[in-house]
Length: 402
Picture 1 (cartoon, one colour):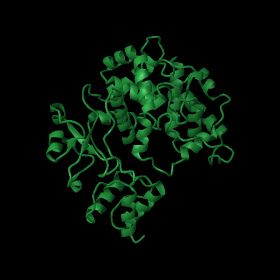
Picture 2: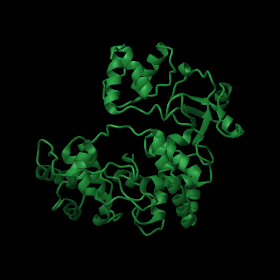
Picture 3: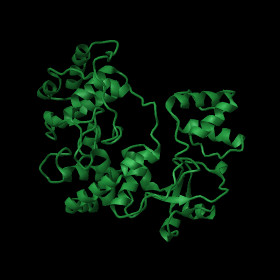
Picture 4: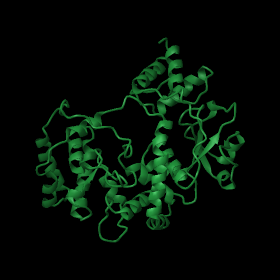
């Protein structure tokens, strides 16, 4: 649906273009000539085609950003220090206060929680202050020419043509992130066409400078994804000593009443009747030695906006803090941070050599890697949490004879 890059303040710094190599294969001019025909064939008007492609040149920094895979993985506690910082909380409360009438009206119409809207607004553009100033057409055209995601990027450019032809945006208005996301809520063009809203009724869905249109667009996305008004998104929980990690499956949902029978307790207060009647998954984003979270269906809705566990926890927690809630209890295992991508490839290779299939070593700790690690941990009598951290890395490498 929506791109995903990290929100404003979390992106990669763009590198100097001086040493960047151009993509192999056809020239940008040849790609542009071919795409001009495809854009026209999609029904885009001649005037719009010209406004998009005439005099257009690639931006090499976009390619570098797209190809860059950060070596170091940000621990979730470091992410949350920024995502739900004191400054972001204060600014969120101020933004909500300044726009309360609009936020509450939008939330009521689309039946979503107002603080969640404000929190997404905060992570995506610092409450409208940093929506991005890259030329979206140039960014998407550069990505299409580069070729790795050509079909996707060309599809988004065709959506841009429809946006301009329908009068939803002007060519000059199309600014945003290097990855093609636009406006205060960072929509890619196809998502804009599917979900953006004209809150003020002026005939344009202005997610760049009109707070009502931007907020209503995000609210419509959440609503269409299945937001359950009044239901929770996450709840921090404490695990009992002796919790059976070997029997825990991260993707399994259970009634909260069953989690309670297994010894889980809220980090604060007592179970509510509402909680006990719902189903939830147990997330351990920093492993078994860090805080646990029961995540509900609304948590999955947030991940439809950005399919990142850290992002969804950040949004839910920021929303709670804006509403006056307390910080997480923790503590976080800062002595056992996640390993970097090179180490993850080494871990994957070692797991495979030991007979625990983690798939092709790619440096990304996905479900297969975590499942293989949990199987290794169970075989060695270790805490089987599948957390790809420094301690697990050392255990696997030692077992593989490294």
